Amino acid sequence: MSTPLTPDALFRAALERDPARPFVTAYDDADGSRIELSYATFDNWVAKTANLLVDELCVDPGERVALALPTHWQRSVWLQACWSAGLVAVPCGPEPVTADVIVASPGTLDAALEAGARDVVGLSLHPLGAPLAETPPGVLDYAVEVRAHGDRFVSMSAPGADSPALEVGDVVLSGEQVTAAARDAAARWRLTSADRLCVFGTEPLVPTSDRVAAELTGPLTAGASVMYWSNPDMARLNDLFRDEKISMVSGFGVHLPDDPHPARRLD
Image 1 (cartoon, rainbow, N blue to C red):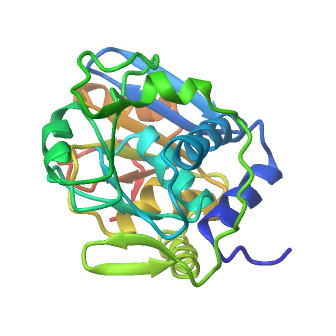
Image 2 (cartoon, rainbow, N blue to C red):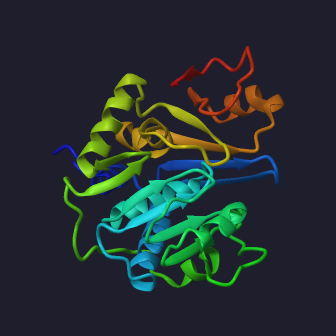
Image 3 (cartoon, rainbow, N blue to C red):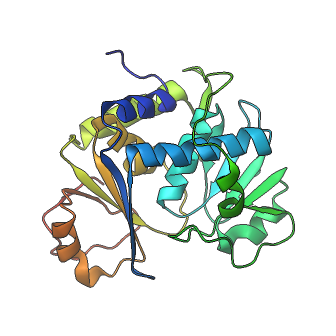
């Protein structure tokens, strides 16, 4: 099997290996929710989002999409949708950067509207897909609009390996560089297909390629699965890690207990 050279090819390879296998589990202790997505279900979300970008927002390959979102499974969907459509994903902090399209959670919508993007998309991040509680003028409600789009996406111009794919801070990485960084991170962290990685959902932080690798591309490379944990109640860390069979934990931006469950830390 040839080595995938783009993030889109990386995901397609993982999808083809076992579409029904659980890929993402997400907990939010603020509302007690838990959802689980297989590779196939995650792909449906990616396809719908890519179709929204291309058919409704009329983005062109190479345009920049700023993701002013916390660590969340929907941010990973948007990352992968951008790469499917040949766009440059720009995960950013709470102050959105200038971009052609800005995708923002409720707390960052005002700043997104002031950033001068052609389009602003708002995500409620509600576990059951509820729309925004309040949609400001000029904001497209993702939960409402994405439902109308197809769950198959066919790119009219497949992104090249040397095309820009990810902007982190002052660094722009090509698709090939993103996948190479994912392979390096997976090797450095000794990720395998047997691993289940916990990534804490924190408020938007200045991203790094390692954070992106921990949230999405590293597990895809290794065939591992991911658990996103938002608003975590640390008192149940040991029980949750045992129940979900967590073997690795990313502590980016999170203070972990001195004696946590015996999972390897990747940072």
